[in-house]
Structures are given as C-alpha cells and as structure tokens.
Length: 167
Image (cartoon, rainbow, N blue to C red; front, top):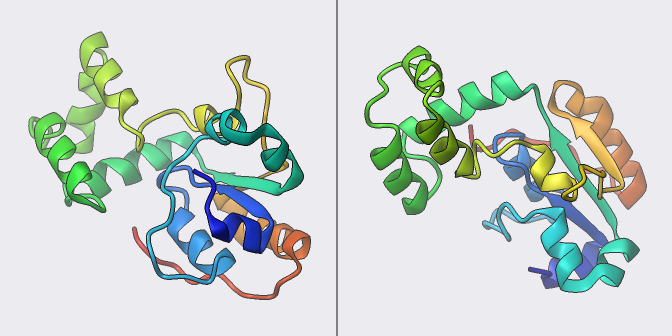
C-alpha cells in the first residue's frame, strides 16, 4: 500500500470514493495517474503503524446522501474502471432511477451487497478503526473544500490549487 510518493510528500491521503479524491490526489501528489485507490487508514496502520503515524494523514468526507446520489450516477455511467462497470452492470441493472435504488435498500440482502461496494461503503470505515476512533490527523469536508484544503496546503507547505476532475 505505501508507495514512494507517500515518502516524497510526507503524507497519506485516504481517498474516500466520491469525495473529490481524484482532484486532491492530482494536486497533492502532482500526478495525473491513478494512484493507490481507496485504501482504508486501518490498512495502512496494519502494514506499518510507525510510518503511518509519522506522516500527516488526511481525508475528505461529504454529506452521505449527496455521496450516495453521486456514486449511483457515477456507477450507472460505467464508473472509473472495468471493475466498477462489471459491478454496476450486475448490481444496479434493475434500477432506472435513484428513487428505485433507494427503495430497494429496504431489502437487507440488497442493502448488504450495495454497502459492500467501496463507492457505497460508509465513509467512517475508511478513516476510523473498529471502535469508530478517528485514525487520520485531519478530516476536511467537501462542502467546505476550499477552506479545508488550505489547511492541507499549509500542513504540507505547498501552494497548488485544486482543479476538478472525475465526477
């Protein structure tokens, strides 16, 4: 999980799906390449706790309803890779609208299957341990991204600005 860019930039960004993560990665790590993906903070800690604790770790979260709407439409359009497309074709094929999708979540089997996919996994599972203790140094909010990203820029001592990518 740890990559050379973590060492180079002295930080770990926990990329919660559908929370501007691609835009943040591109600016922080100065790349347009797909990076490590949606790795949970606990996975980094399990790999190397000392390294995780020595770096500035951060994540961004957003309103859960807005995130669910975004994830649904993103995946219905094919997602960002072949795995997304295959999963969406299999699991979202019966839902023409977001309303149908939400109503189907009343069914426990459907709900469990949907919430197991990373784009719908509750955000706290990316940034907290099993006892819901926050593991990262900073959590920004998408709804306040411009101000919250200034905190990240200050902590990492750079002045690059966010540019929207993905959707």
